[in-house]
Amino acid sequence: QCSGAFLQPKKISKFIKGKIQVMPAENHATFPDMILAFSEPIKKMTVPKNFKVECSNENAFCTVSANGPNALKRNSLVAIPITIFVNKKSKPLLVGMKWNGKDVCETKPEPHPDPKPEPTPEPEPEPTSEPEPEPEPTSKPDPNPECDNSRYAKAIHLSLLFYEAQRSGKLPANQRVKWRKDSALDDEIPGGYYDAGDYVKFGFPMAATITMAGWGGVDYKKGFVKACEWENYKSMIKWATDYFIAAHTGPNEFVGQIGKGDIDHAYWGRPEDMRMHRPVYRITAQRPGSDLAAETAAALAAASLIFKKDNPSYAAKCLKHAKELYNFADKYRGVYSNSIPDAAIYYKSWSGYNDELAWGAVWLYRATQNKMYLNKAEQLSNSLGSPEELSWDNKGSGVQVLLAAITGKQVYKDRANQFCTTVLTQKPKTQDGLVFIQQWGSLRHASNVAFACLFAHDKGLLANDVSAQAKRQIDYILGDNSKKFSFLIGYGDRYPLKPHHRSSSCPLTGTCDWNTSNSQAPNPQILKGALVGGPKSADDNSYVDSRQDYVTNEVTTDYNAGFQSAAAFLVATQ
Image (tube, rainbow, N blue to C red; front, side):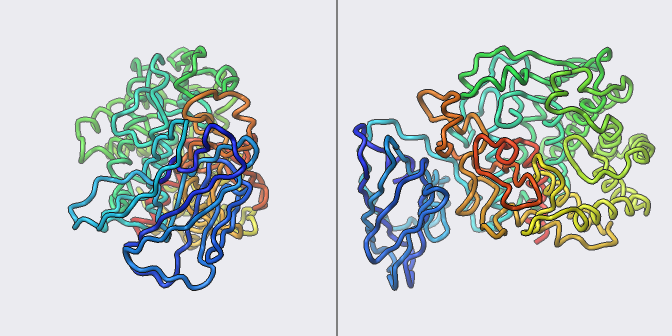
């Protein structure tokens, strides 16, 4: 059994005895490796002499393998007695198990109409006096053999689960991340996404997230379809666009933030338990925010393209609001973080609003084919300089890449080529090949550039082929590095256990407070699919898996957006 098979009894003991039972569906020349993941580090684990065990990540992961030849026959039951020695006052849970490369601790999807397999005896459950955790959602794509099951398809699946973990508001019946509950139901505008490991709804990075994630769906829908994730992807986009539409409370009015940073950050606990004041901040004609309004217009324009075929009425609704918001942005010009001073502490618009006005115009042109928007984008493109990043703040390089693809003009191709060549070949790199752009969210920056440049290469826009360097960034994230460490939680055998993230750090029941935050134990809920910040310098060793290190180990919705789009590209084109 999983999800609590090794829950300690009420009386604390030094060790727990149990057994692992396996009935293989096919013959094996030797016993395939079995990887066990625990909610807390253990002291050690022992197995019979014909097996061996190696533990890593502070003994939170243990691998059981054969100690010499150990053939397995199909449908033969194998029982492995194990003893787990625990730390003082520790109550470790078995939260994950992989055998022969497959996750066997997952909630099973509805079976396909295949012949029924022969029954497998289940091991007897350990006695427990505490409630078992709810089962985790599946961490692999639909087992339908027609679904792509590549590493990039698995990354898409996990990333979409992360967005479900970030949902605010009334959760739907088909919510797959079961440890999350309804929250912030009294917000003036319910719904949307919590920004990071906290509970503020920052409108500017949320909109930038959806535009970047939307770009992947608009141009590489095939990747999501091949991975059997198209419906989940559309749900991810719509959870935000429903919120944006509701937040557009007047032609020249938009709710740009719910929650106040310092009040929110003083609380460590579950979102459903929070009771702090959550003020609402708007942009208006008197307090303009061209960057926020134009970015949200871009996100809604991208969404209109995503839903155009499957849900034309909703697509039309998104496009209507996108046009109104863009008109608001263009007519009443101003920097949003001047109008919402609390946002300036966390998401100041350093690049101003011209890049968002150009970006919004490009996306509205793609959605409408109205040359008024294209002309506007081209006029503004000359004022954007040569940024060496693509981020929630600065979209200038994205504008040049899309204009090159739309118009075919050499001036934009040259700018796109300069951007991709400079960043991917001239920026500092770690020894393992990660392009280092800046300290905060280094993996986010690398994957955003990777996606834009893979797109540019795919469209034949680049004089220099940097596609291998771009793909290298995604592979680095997924564990192709000297430490064999995946920075995408839940992917592979070794990944972050202690992200700076409030809700996943909380147990299912009981107290969750700053003592929980300061604990050295892994997060009891696995925040599957979250991309952590990553190394904070051009040194692979500068990454620290610590809940207290919010530079390297916090997660945010915008960290995943470009990465997810790059994964869709790689599934679609390979």
